[in-house]
Amino acid sequence: MDVEKAVDKHARYRQAHRDKTRAATAAWYALHRDDVLKKRRDRYHANRETLKEQRRDYYVANREAILEKARSQKTECPHCHLMYTSWYLKKHLETRHKFVCE
Image 1 (cartoon, helix red, strand yellow):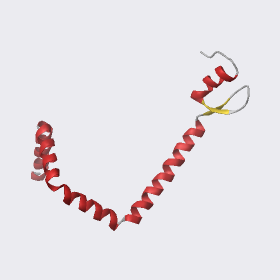
Image 2: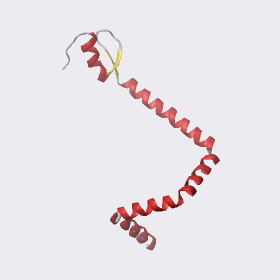
Image 3: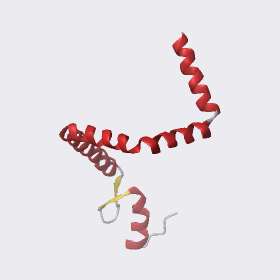
Image 4: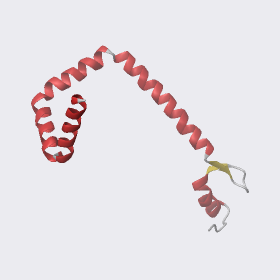
């Protein structure tokens, strides 16, 4: 119970004094910047291959999601039967087939 009160007390202080907290954090980071960056570099170099593999997996999954979304947004032009994104179809009809779309 005391731990919860302490956490709530600190959280309430941070909420009430955002500028002070931000300034104190910036000052601490400026003082310890070299150590923080060294630890970050060391952590990266210790797990370099794992991190690269995670990044590649994320990239592949994200790429597939983006391509699937693009495929789902394609519609066929009723006149020339070519596939266009739904937001470009109106422009295509106006320029290629001279239809006025509203």
